[in-house]
Image (cartoon, rainbow, N blue to C red):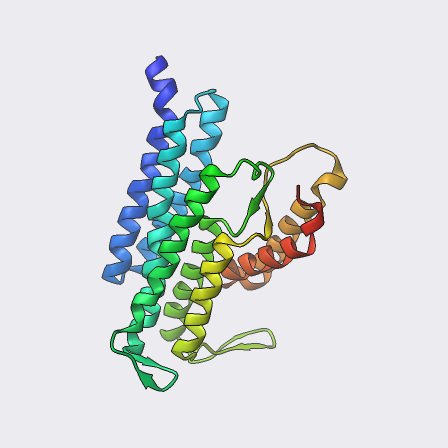
Length: 247
């Protein structure tokens, strides 16, 4: 019985890893819907492994390391491969010049910086009630969410309308490289990001979390699935606004 209790959270973490592996495979194969489903499973399992470990008082150093290794695949490799796929059609063209290599490999910078972020997080003892830098699951939702919408977008009209908002994603390679660099920097940035961990139940201590939840719900109601990456952008902006209250 103790064996099950001590290892249940680790099994859930391995489920996250398995789901991430399957998602990466299907991303390479071009089956983006299956990848999206796998990422949802990974996100749920990533939440519940820590929840179960705390509930059963089965926290361990092994669990911490397993969690980071699983996240490295689900939320490190997958977003890197996603940007790799986005940049793939551009070949060697950058700013009108022909590079001696294909620029798609720049997409893997996200994977490298995700690895660096996870290593830093494991050594950082400050991030109990906030994150320092954008966490890897949020970064994955942002990058894959944009790409997933692109796939739906290209199968429909060239320009989609959301109310009075007109969206067209015919961007050049430079825009995607800028997003790659920004994403990589955000992962290891000193910017404090809201974490849904409650230090107390006092209302004034939780204004940032309330603002994040209310804003995210409104965005999802208005934009539906397209709003998923927009929620991450809102998350970054609202975290910047509440910098001084995050501690």
